Amino acid sequence: MRLKTHPHLGLRLSDHPLIGDLADCRKIYFDEAADRPPRYRIVYRLKPNEDTPSNVEVIVIGRRASAEVYKEAIRRLGR
Image (cartoon, rainbow, N blue to C red; front, side, top):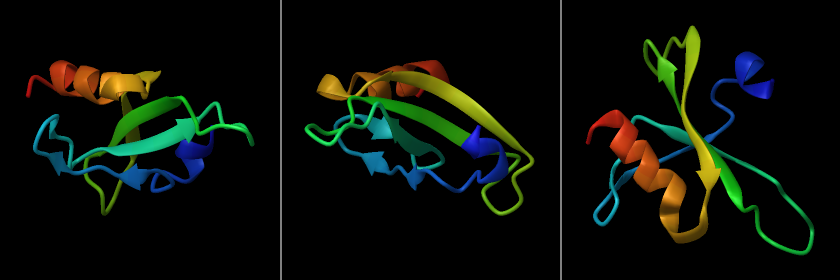
């Protein structure tokens, strides 16, 4: 998997006023196609930290529609 060799590949998330704080997480798109935007995301975070990651913790893989994947990440992280 690309994340194992390139843990900083995903885009950093933020503290969203309506969804919650995912500033310590990153997202990666998949299910990309030329005729539409990607529908799915992987939300993950680097452990033990962003500067010296030795592990990737996948929080959730899910649909982008209605911010489902981000809401589930918030729920799983207990935020």
